[in-house]
Structures are given as C-alpha cells and as structure tokens.
Length: 259
Image (spheres, rainbow, N blue to C red):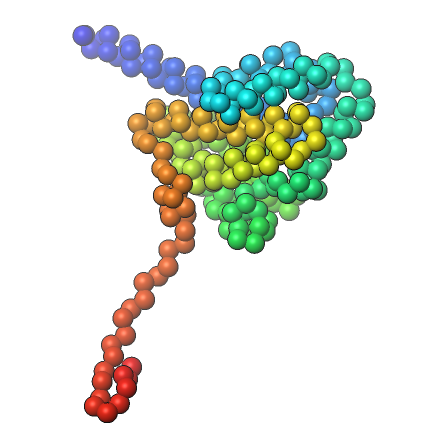
C-alpha cells in the first residue's frame, strides 16, 4: 500500500473520530438540558421536531438502553406539541421532587451518593472542581448548584470531547467518567425510574445512565484500554494513608518493652 493511500485512510479515520466526538458532545448537552429544568412547550416542540430520542448519535443497544429508549419514546408520544398547563404543572412538580426538594432521595449530586453520611458538597465536589479548574472552568455559583451536579458533569464531558487533542481528550473523558460520573449515575437512574411520578423523568434518567455506560464502552474500544473494575476505581479513589515509621523497641531484663 502506498504512503499516500495510508495517509488518506488515516485522515478519514481522524475525521470520523472528530465527527463522532462533536456529535456525542451534542448528545450530552441535550441530555444535560433535560436534567437542567422541567420541559416547557418550546422544549417539547424542539424535541419532537428532531424525533428525540432517535436523533441521538449514540443509540444505546443494551437491554437497559433499549428499555430506556422505549420509555422516552412512549413519554414523548403521550405529550402533545402544545401540552396544556395541567401536564406542564405535573412535569414541573416531578422535576422539583427529584432535583430541588429531594423527595424521592435521588440526588443529582455526586457527593450525596459517595459520602459516607450522604452529605452535599463533600470531597467529591472538590475533586470535580479541580478537574474544572485544570481546564480553566468554574461554575456560576456552587451554593445554588454544586460542581458535582449531574448537569455540570455531563456538560464537562461534552467540553472535553470538543478539545483538539483527540486521544488525550478521550482518555481524560474516560478517566473522569470512571472516577466520578459513572460511580453514581446508575444508582441515580434506577432510583428515579422507580420512584418518580412521570414517565418522562423516569425515561430521561434511565436513558442518561444507559447512554453514558455505552459511551464509556465505546471509549474503551477506541482507546484499546479495558475499563477498570469497580473495585479498581474505588481503590484508586481512596485517600492514601501515610506510612507510619517503625518505632524501635528495647527490652531490659525484668521489665516490659520500653519505647
């Protein structure tokens, strides 16, 4: 094979990967929007106009992903392009129950899932903040919405995927998903699915979790690096304890050990 043909194939592969990254980033931005606020008539019209969720670049093909897609499609079918105020109020109430009032104990914030006491704004939040700061990013007000909120984590992965350095970008995206988003998103999705009041948010939560899992599998294939196990990730994220120095012990006849 000539070098010119090899170069052309290489450039085509790079173009495909670049296009994939951009379109997946768009998917993640859409998913972030669905967790950012309750849907209004305008958003529902926009989603229907593009045939969401079939418009996603990455269509989950796992069993949980297919079930989530079906649930969202059914929810979309049940919602008209001009929903009445009662329907919008129902969606707004369910959004508040999940994301604002925490009535169903399914927090959209990482710390609540990973902290031993299920508290907000704990170690996870500061770790996530360090990721943002290392890329020159900061959130508007952590008191209103902490750094480790689902919306911000999805938007951050989308940001990483649009950076210029292709393989390095993918590696960073995979690492952030391993160390943060995917340690808790599945639990969030499962709890919202069974506890929320509307098929819409049940489907959105389940679809987001399935989408991110399958995206991580694809990153593993592209990077040719197997996904670390849950145990390996948890071990990696545990704070390292400093090694204690051995203290010499002397013995005197007729006495106990003396330090």
